[in-house]
Image (cartoon, rainbow, N blue to C red; front, side, top):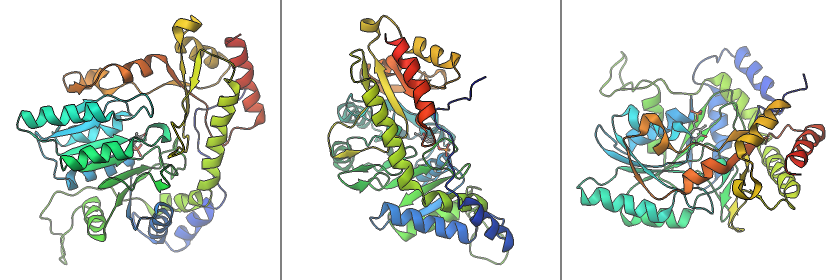
Length: 377
Ligand SMILES: *Cc1c(COP(=O)(O)O)cnc(C)c1O
């Protein structure tokens, strides 16, 4: 069997083990320690804008805590981009709150500002202003930051920026993850950098960060015994994981360059194929880390579907994957409100994510080219 080509696999930089060794030598084998502190500092340096970062056990945990800190409670409504990974929406349900899903627009595949405003107006009309908006930078592509933030500010609703896929992306030179009241990062194994599993909440002041650390370490009051006046969580990042994160931060810029060069590889590959559009930045305000490269296939023109392509890839041991299936089409969320038309649905029907890893070499690319050229002949 030929070697499997993954969509996106972990790619170590080299110094990860050094930081893990340090943790062992000093016995910081716990969900706190020097690696956690240093990893947070590195993230703050990368994101700039004076942010304060709390390292957590997962991006999902960061979303959960962000919602709690936005005051989301049982029965509240929270607006969420429909086209996303389920982890964007699940924490709303953890709190017994109600997701309201919103369609994407065609340029960035992210939150449609018009549908967003429709959703807000409808909720307000029914006497229930949404408590938060979860906006996602899908596949690393910044959402329409100015339009979305303008509407959120107009109605005074906090934005939780799901930048789980967008570390290293910028809009007008400013880092994704720093625009909302809170920003969410993920370091899961398939993300642009990984800590094996992990996440972070990006805050804009020390108070919010301290609140996040407090909630993520079981909400212990200041007392010699264990005393609690709030429900806490066990969401802090391990010092071992953070060691991996420190090594990965040293190569983040290289990883972004490599992912962007995979995107360019596909742009070149599909240049003369009219039935395919490679997902690209709408203009130079947008800088995507191109975590995943994705294409839209005009299946009517081509008379073949993205499933046909996916299966052909599979036969030669190359992984590809349909775009995220919108949340309003998921059985588990079928009864939720939805605003918009069928943009995200159409993207899902015709879209495919292609191997995008920063560790793909020339021979991998040749195998991909060969299959594409055969398929679109
Ligand atoms: C990966 C991801 C998450 C969740 O992050 P975990 O660290 O896996 O919990 C949330 N939102 C999006 C858009 C993601 O891609």
